Image (cartoon, rainbow, N blue to C red; front, side, top):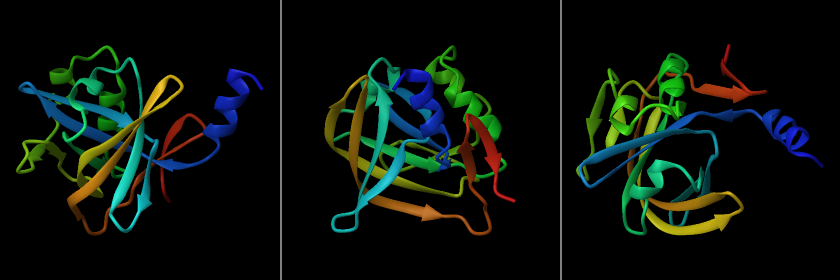
Length: 158
């Protein structure tokens, strides 16, 4: 197995696209992630993975809150903006319409849905951290189709 083949194989698994948002020391953080999944119903647990070098790790300590924003098919520009590692945390939120949870975490408007979670556990996984979060609240929009990531491309469900 080599890195390119591994990426190609995994890239052929279609996933949804999320933006994970968090807040720490008066800074809003956010990044695009397709490594999101539900884990448990009792209690409600989810997980996502984040590169150990990412700035957003600064806001994701045990007990901190974050929001998983499930992007809609009309939000590919937001996906790309939050995936751009050349942008500062504040630049990633530039011209993105948001509201905030009671814990001051940004919710991206017009997303398919969102979940606010508390970091329960952090596991090292190679060059990434695996974050396990307990869901505290959330909401679902009606009549929204999700944005999909497949074969290294952002796509819409037809």
